[in-house]
Amino acid sequence: MKGGRQRIDFEGVSAQIRPETVTLAAADIAIVEQNFDFDLLTPAKLMEKAVGREVTIVRVNPATGAETREQAEVLATNGGVVLKIGQRIEVLRDDGLPVRVIFDKVPDNLRARPTLSVTIDSAHPGMRPASLSYLTPGLGWKADYVALYDEAAGKIDVQGWITLTNSSGTAYENAQTLLVAGSPTQVSSPGPTTWRQPSRRPALEQAGTESGSRERLGDFYLYPLPERTTIANLQTKQVGFLDVHGVAAEHGYEFRNHWLGTTDQPQSAKSIYRFSTSAHAGLGDQLPAGILRFYMRDKRGEPQFIGESRIDHTPMGSTLSLVTGDAFDVKVQAVVEKRTRVNEHDWKTDMRYELSNASPRPLTVTLLQDGLWGDSRIDTESQKSTRRSADTAEWNVSIPANGRTVLTAGFDTRF
Image (tube, rainbow, N blue to C red; front, top):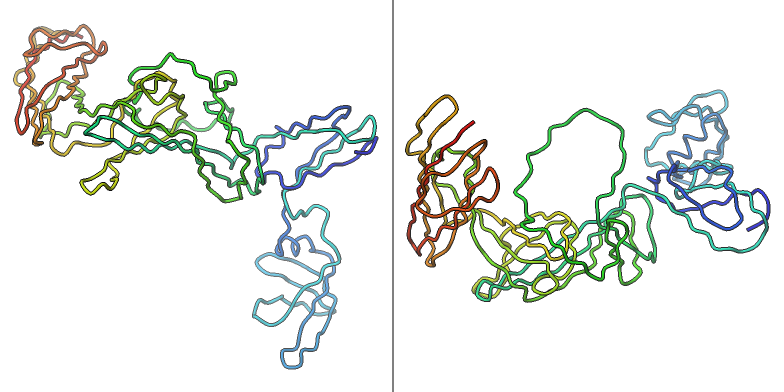
């Protein structure tokens, strides 16, 4: 680095760099100005920048191979190149004939690669370490998980993968990569209010309270890649970060009746898998948000996909309860047997729930009844319930193999 005012060019920065987030840190320098040149050098751009200037047109006679050179002024490049050659106007055609254009130089504002130019004032000449940091879209990562469930053993093996995606317009070679897991707030321009999809069934059954050895950054966790890696532009790369075997897991079923009403026909219960992220009896790590895909081995020993579920950022020591799909053989039908209006604000509803099991083994279904708003209570029930929340009652209903179970309950609902 020389002393005094000078310009330093950083080639190969992201083509989507947010220039307002750039920070150049080095000892004894002051930043005067910075410019981001993102107009990249292409044949079309080179011709566009030549409008109003002269270029050399070289034509080759296909029969003799003789070259003819003419000076031409570029008049326009809108949908095609219009040239003025002497006193005539000509369109540079793309008809396969051997024609090429020679330019005197590359314009100063055209770059072969995205370039950040920083003008600095250096207190003294000499080498010194410097760091350049900035934010950019187009470079991101997500977590993906693959779970293999052993039904006979009640165990699960889980692999975690970091999926890196680069569409920023430049490659990052031999990069030391550090991933930050969390949801930092970024301010965006206000826009019109959009409809949001209703929230999905929560996968986090119980939030954990354990701390591990993983490095924290404020309220986030850091996941450094063990080795340097090259992330090419327009490339997706996967790196493993979790590999745990033999974690205890439960397979169960859940059915939720969203209001005190009748379902037109029997509905499938949800197939649920439950396991822990605890250090002692679980995965033993904090899990970045992502999609967990479940597999089971068939009789031939081949793993088969049985469903997937999304998880949010999950603390260590949590209990996850993930839905993989609708159970084929386990059905529930809710029926209103009687509904009576006691007064203006008081209703009594008698419900019957018929649960069927077409599988050759007994099982238990967690039956949830939503919609118990206001001052609601259960007057009668054929099996004792628990209150999962102010609005939801819960029963764990056992169903025999290839059999049925009927549960009844009476509700006093006041609004």
